[in-house]
Image (cartoon, rainbow, N blue to C red):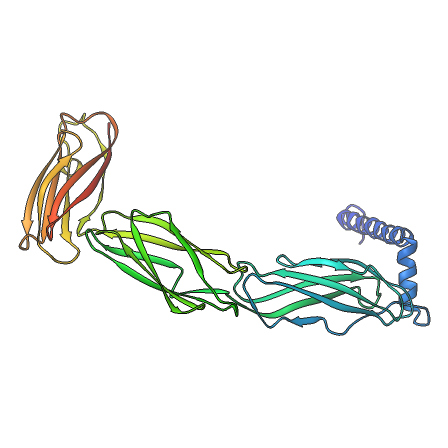
Length: 363
C-alpha cells in the first residue's frame, strides 16, 4: 500500500528532479534568446547556401625553406585568396613561439588575393625546425586555418670539430695539448682576425691555415704542467658578417694521484657525559691509494685541531696507506664541528695534498 510516510524520500527526489529539469529548460531558453545579432546572422548565412559567403583558399598552407644557415632570417608570404562571394575578414593571426607574424591583410574582397607573412630567426637554432601559425577568419566553413614553415635544415656558418669545448684532464705536472678544426661554409673567403682568452695564464694557442679562406687548425696547450683545475673561454673574431665572433670553452681538470676513501668522515652525535663512550664514536679509519698504482709516501699529516690525532700504517709496498683517526674526548668542544686533515704526499716526484673532512656534534 502506498503511503506518504513510507515513500517520503522518493517523493522528495522526484520533486528535486522536476525543479532541476525546469531550471535547465529556462537556462537553455534564456541562452538562445540572448544570442547576438551577429551570431544569428552567421548561423543563418551558414545554413542558407544561396546567400553570399566568404571562402578562404590558399596556393599552399605549407612552405619548405630547404637548407639554411644558422643566423639566417626566413621570411615567407603565404598567398590567401577569397574565392567566395562576400568580403573575407582576417580577424587575427596567432603564431607559435619562435615564429613571428610580420604582416597580414585584414580585408580581402571576393575574387581578390591577400598575404600573411611569417618570419623565423634561426639564430642559436640547430637541426630540423617546424613552425606554424593559425589564421582566424570569418569563413563560416573554415574559421581556423593552420599555415606552417617546415623542413628547415639548419647548417652552421662556422663549424668547430670535434667540439667547441676543450677538456684538459690530467695529473699534476702533466702538459696537455688539444686540437680543433675550424671551417666556414660561406662562399666568401673566411678569416680569423683575432683570438683572446680569459685564461691567458693557463693556456697558449697556435692558429694555422689548412685551406686558405676556408679551414683553420687551432692547437691549444697548457702553458706549464697542470697545477690546478680551471675554467675559461677563448673568443675568436672573424671577418664574417654572419658570425663576426664565436667562442670555445676550455676546462682544465686536475686528477689526483692519491685517492682518499672516504674523503668525508661523519661521526654523528658524541655524548661525552657518559662514563663509557663507544670507541666507534671517537675513531675512524680512512685509506689512501694511488690512482695509477705507483708507490707513494706520506710526508706529513696536519690535523686542523689538537684534539684530532692520527696513526699511519703502510700496506702493499707503499701503494696503500691506512690512517687511523682518533678524537680526544677530554678536549672535544661542545656543539657542531667541522675540521680538516691535510695529508701531504709525494708520488712520482710530485707533491700533492689530500684533504679529509671530519664532521660531527658533541653533546
